[in-house]
Length: 378
Figure 1 (tube, one colour):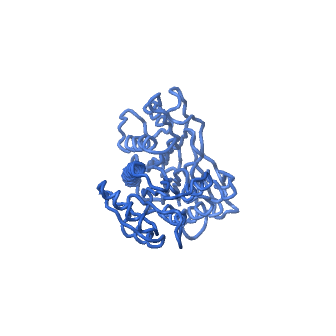
Figure 2: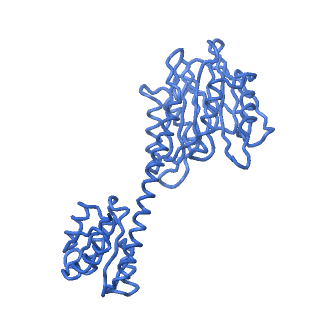
Figure 3: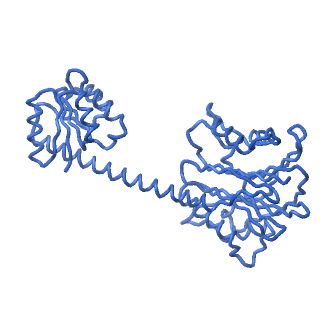
């Protein structure tokens, strides 16, 4: 049974409305002032409120504004009862949050019709709210599943750590690292275009495919071959327009050589040196279109020797495409300079990077997934 709250300082109007509505099978609660009406609304959370506009103390506009700005009444339908009928008065009522109006003197059939319409909208709002909460819960579970797939930090024979902050929506960042054998470590980070499950599912598929080495004939030691195989497997079409960027490398810990290839991804940053002033910076990137864009895309390998005191950063564009408080977009160069400045800090470098990016961001959350991998070779 729907519960209706009547707020009116006129006892005769309250009695009339109460009798009319109770005959229709509604449970009716009454209040004689705006203050009492708000108290009873907070106690019973009615589906619909009928409130007189002109009352001593809190008038109907003030009651409406308080009710409509309180999230606990987000689905409550609010009807203002008034003898005012000018356009200016209607505008004031709508600005205060009123959903509908009933004019005095009250006409019985009009009252019933407006109450029925208001309760239908109340029920529709409740159903939408329930579906929204269910969807948010499912998206949260999906995000937790993605997090559960991420690798654990590595401490031996060198240090690999990461930070991952998903955006306000389910995103498409994914990364992994694992030993191909006792001497070769594969490491990659990919970023699928867009947000939502359509972005997440391809990234999870790639992770499972590479982790299980399901493509038996593929040489996982050759990054360009891996990217070509992924491009052959994940071609976008009219039903699926998703593509992704990726940086993939294989490190030989014996001869300290890194072979890598990239597909439309931001360059990995290799910083070598014992202090920011003496650091050497190398941007590791090869030409290649994002995976899935073109069937005949070509990918090439590059090699890099890893010197002593080197740190490798692999990241998604969410790490530097950040809108600052002045409305301008931060840059890759500024992000690289931040990494260099923290190269030899004593405390957690990634934690300091993350704190800086959170402070830099002008919004409550990041618009895109933010993923950073840090490999400290010594």
